[in-house]
Image (tube, rainbow, N blue to C red; front, top):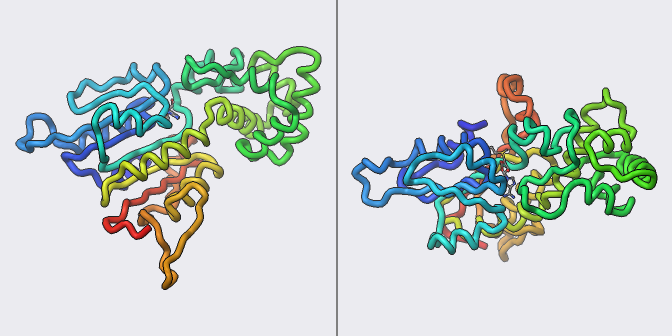
Length: 300
Ligand SMILES: C[S@@+](CC[C@H](N)C(=O)[O-])C[C@H]1O[C@@H](n2cnc3c(N)ncnc32)[C@H](O)[C@@H]1O
């Protein structure tokens, strides 16, 4: 949904934009293409700040004076914008989760298809790995993350299997986890859910998303837009409720007359990829695009 996401941002050629999930740089390049070039007659040239917590993303660096790479977790968006002296932004894009690069790098441990250390850190310098969680969390804590982040209805049973297996021998590699879970190899969707749940916990993806949403709301200019591609129901629900209410609790406040008080107008309500796109890129199957515009008159 690259085209739809970029269109959703309604880019101003001299605006200030943030792509908080740079990855391979496809979205960032598309944003820059829509902005004025240095040679253009405009006095104030726009700028794009692209974040990625994975230093490997810098291999896709863009040579362009209008572009700055920020090697950081996007939860620190506000601090970095302060650092660069940016008070307001015209738009922000987030294409959440992991990139193709992560799945294609066997040694990073994101995929159950490759034998690798159980790592799953997007930021290679972070302290906690998936092995720490699998061997250190209580059965109850494991069951909770499998249920919440993997949407695994049988999370309790899987957590029990993992705890039984680790009492014999520490679970240190991807294949150890697959065996410990006792999920049959042919149930690849279940295995994908197990790995997704751990990845979300390792990288505190929900916590980072919450902090980034609040910072983005406060940084956005009136008329500015946030476009977010979500890939699982928990993050999608958080973004949906945040766009509707303007707060993390999703509490809808109303004025005396019953009008909803919110800083946003919702522009896209969870658009899904076309069948052709899903055929080309299976990851797009679970993608949902949500776009919101900051209201000119903030009625919250
Ligand atoms: C789905 S990919 C983005 C792909 C990108 N839109 C493109 O066009 O190639 C997500 C990227 O965001 C990064 N990422 C995920 N969560 C992050 C966070 N909290 N802070 C910074 N980067 C993050 C990942 O390392 C990954 O490279």
